[in-house]
Length: 161
Image (cartoon, rainbow, N blue to C red):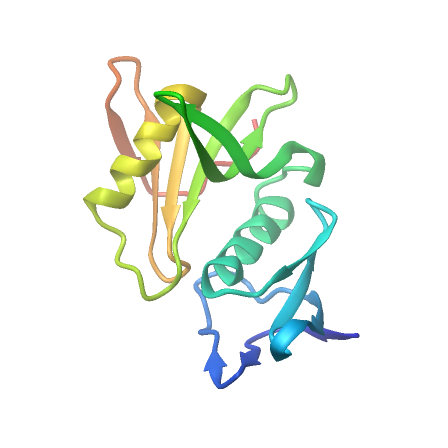
């Protein structure tokens, strides 16, 4: 058992430094020498993929900087769209257990573009969060959902209400 605090390598794949504070992860070598990290929110070991590297940073940021308790965070939250099962990367809930913020994570080499925004908006058409965030760990965009159904950019990460 070891810990990861900055940028691990996995079979010659280096995980880039992200635009989030450094994090501390419990790590181990799993099958085929892949790095696995323990996810405290889901209570299980996960392969540390580039997208998971971003998700781990965002979850830690929600707890350490935005005031959410780990119990108020759901990862891979089910969202059914037109009878098709989908999963939102992260949903943070308010004190009344209502969805408050949807976060869509992409791996660092994926460009944050209109298609990523459309995916988050589709999920939010079901969840109805007042905020959405889309990030690849290097670029992060935050929006508030207005009453007219549009999304307005905001210059900060939403905090716990």
